[in-house]
Image (cartoon, rainbow, N blue to C red; front, side, top):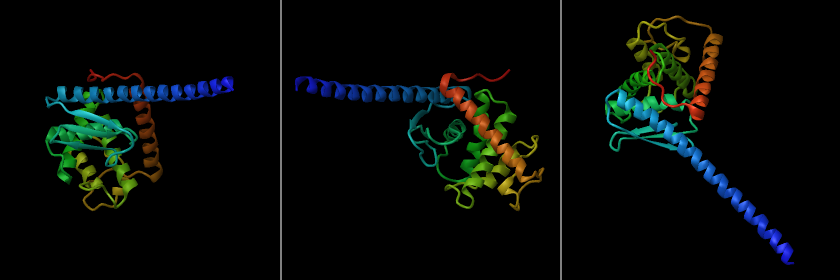
Length: 221
């Protein structure tokens, strides 16, 4: 009987130890991931001459993955959202402008600032422009006529194109029939689908590198 009890005790202790070890490993990974996002935010605020901001990384999604509070100088990111790094750049834009309320002008300013932040992190202006434009097109395709409060994805797309007229516009996709859309090249639906696939692949690759061993990159020379 004593032997049986001993076996049961050892089995229970092993399970408990395994759970504790797993929990500690998960916490350590979360802390490391948070540290890297905070490092990116610090790099951007220092390079662009802004006050510091605290990044709070949480499980799941928050307000469709992120939000900024100007009152507390904090950014909350849902680590399970898509394109978390671009979203961090966008929320930093709200922090820079001091406008964290919902409104189309605030969102347009944050999109433009995101392009500057992405350049601090090592992307070219054209790469940052393309990432932002395709992200807005994708949001419109996904959310349709149900945008998040304060957003008008097609208007935001047109605003970015007006700010960067030297770049060839991407296929506007679901914004194609918008009456105030600026002129641009119109591609077949298969072409925009291919652009989306390439964008997802590049974003996933960059995120994998970032989460594994990427430290904040300096501007390209």
